[in-house]
Length: 143
Figure: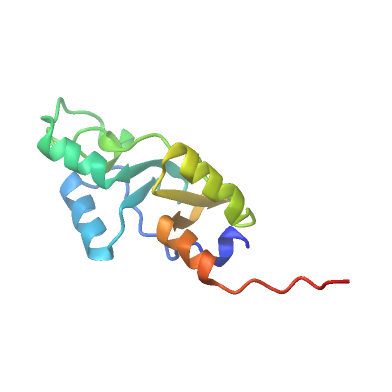
């Protein structure tokens, strides 16, 4: 089965200058655990998870101010760009669920961005992989 058959679309994403608070609202309103952080052209810059936001809010104090164009701190408040992690593994729509599942299990990833031509076109989560398990597979002819 191909990744394109189970990936979640449309993609809910954040800009690097979005505040951490706005990103948290976006996550909760859309019931997602990870947001791809994309530039104005839709290219992946990084990923922002629930753990990144919770850690920034409850485990540390925001430090410094920076350039909002690079996604750094805005007026001492964290932005999606300042909290995001650099993208780890990504997937292609034509990739297989077996390959992606192996990567997600090995790297302990809850979700993976799907890229086509460098642009985020979907996300694959554990729930998406489980959905792939429940879809009927075509019968293999026995000769």
